[in-house]
Length: 195
Image 1 (tube, rainbow, N blue to C red):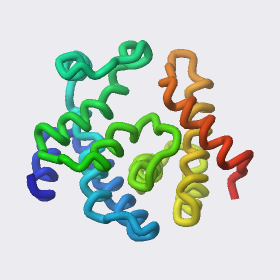
Image 2: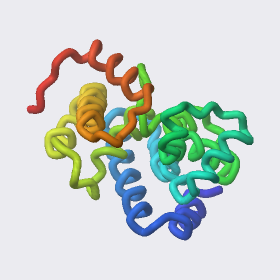
Image 3: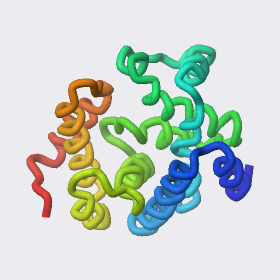
């Protein structure tokens, strides 16, 4: 499907606030792609499709993973909303005709991050967190500035803030991949402070 067709389809499927967030991620991803020399078209498609499975119910997400033999972790079973990234990659491929593995991987890992993310992975992971419509996360002003200077450090600080937030909430459960990604980037970046 062409970009505009996908955009129109998503506008009809997603809640208005989710669609607005998606377009904010697209805008941010295009900016970062141009800043870091990433393929703008890939960034645009990955950003547009990163939350394409958000409209699915939890049972639908579980069923989609089971029928495609995608593993579901204990944490994902306890919090099926985490499955929207895996399911998003499936929908991007099956519904929207995306075959580029780099785009599909960026969609698949945009929620938890993974160790040693590629450039497109980093762009979507960071864009999802810092897009202009976000206003609740801590350190957004600093992270938005840093994103133009160093994507790796920005991803590390996002992971650190995410883990701090999840650890502060009793009912929150953390995907083990988030911890693995954090440990990887902590080793790479050391103890950074916000500047």
